[in-house]
Image (tube, rainbow, N blue to C red; front, side, top):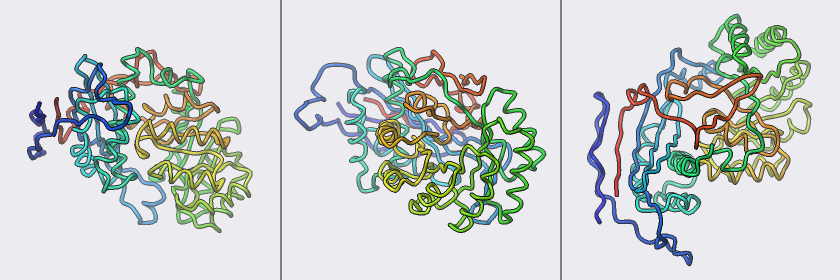
Amino acid sequence: MALTPAPSTTSPSSTSSPSTAAPDPAPAPGPQGAASLPGDRIASVRLSSVYLPLATPVSDAKVLTGVQAPMTEIALLFAEITTKDGHDGIGFSYTKRAGGPGQYAHAREIAPALLGEDPSDIGRLWTKLVWAGASVGRSGLATQAIAALDIALWDLKARRAGLPLAKLLGAHRDSVRCYNTSGGFLHVPIEQVLDNATAALERGIGGIKIKVGQPDTAADLRRLTAVREHLGDAVPLMVDANQQWDRPTARRMGRAMERFGLTWIEEPLDAYDAEGHAALTATLDTPIATGEMLAGVGEHMALIDARACDIIQPDAPRIGGITQFLKLAALADHHGLHLAPHFAMEIHLHLAAAYPLEPWVEHFEWLEPLFEDHLEIRDGRMYLSARPGLGITLSDRARAWTRESEEFRR
């Protein structure tokens, strides 16, 4: 049967060129003969490019030092997969400042490879998608596009089982410690940072993270002093330098911040400086956390092999989805690392709940307008819901923010 994309739907401001017909899927190679077995099959894949506007331009250390412009929106790639038996799943990836059109374009090229496939064969399908775009590589934009599809397949599998994703994976807990980041960016005056911290704690969030890495390191210490005095010693407090410091500055600042009893210092150095992070980890009493900017399991392995952190911070949409996250989590657990996944709490709550050591999940309210269902937060923790899969449904606002959308059908 020939495969053709369903009619494309776009926002009034966007355009979309017609896509070519997708070829009939060939039987999967290998002795298993997976494609010849009876059972449910993927009937359609819908991709949507959604741009979430931020109420206020957001600045961290890289903005204050002129490396980046303030962030004004987040580009998201949504994948919605439906089977011939009527099961469905949703997944998403994202990017900030640049790359949204590229992720969407790559996903459009490879998504038809899923049609006619058994949605349960997630590991095999991840590999098939990688090879569908092999020339682009196995990290960065390519695997971030795959991530949306991979996450949708896991959501579908859990929904079909009638289980929250964490329960399908094998949960160690029904709730996870959570901390807020979105109230502590460097564009926010310190008085507002303190008010934001109070509001977060009153909402039930358990910890507060603020951004550091200003050109004037003394200003960082003044800001941190004010937050610690405001919170008291009992509230978990983290800082994030967003890769701003060189090695000498990171050592000096790490020592100066020991007195604040921080839960961790995040990204003190360039994300790929495993040797420098390892030296800090060995020298400082305060735990070192890093990993959010890395784009694959292999890149994280360099951190693990170098003993470059106490807390690893993978981002499932950035490293290729849940399939790859589970590989990394097994490695991290084997090496006794703690886990604090970056961003995308709607996904990472489930993955953190299935991690053996007590983890943290990062709270950003930014993505909440995209979904009809919101997470329960109380007593310092984020709770799994009873909803199957990821437990999320796209909101009308998310549909309205869609710039391009295309559906491929069997």
